[in-house]
Length: 249
View 1 (cartoon, rainbow, N blue to C red):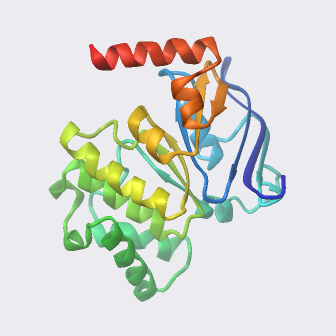
View 2: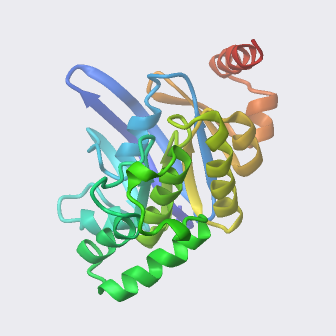
């Protein structure tokens, strides 16, 4: 559809004989916040990595603004610059300080001059409350602070869509809240986001759609109140029941 920012059609991904994604249809509009939930090994992270072509799909289509990015002549670097990724393990450059982590991609990939890259980086570091730490190296930061820098770095690349791959799973419980607050603020600002998460309360609060994946397919998707409160699919029901029991136990 014309107003979809990204439309994914029958996306498949295999590693050798293992079929990780088995035909995904998915679309996202500008300003949408979609949270993807599901058991480990269901293909959630692979799906994200395929969306921004860190993993190249085996087959299917990814339509960005009307063009299939999987066509041979498509400018993949341009597309990747529009679809940012925030990882579980931060993926910061340990030999660079916070500011350099947020400027190097702008200079090398977007070909910005350093001063405009620095100005842009400082704006987003302020947004995630990390501007006081611009001289610090990653080894001097807590997990929550590293993740906030990683978010600022992704925002600095002028991405239209941000993908988050379980951004709080490597954090101590005390620092989870600070990262979720930043993400909540971004969602409320209108940023388009696709988030793989196990934080159900967060998913319910910030997303306008929840997607349940299992065994390489989307089993069910809908508004948070539909999926979390009244799921139709048996696999969704079983997952949520086990999850709630596990959390309360």
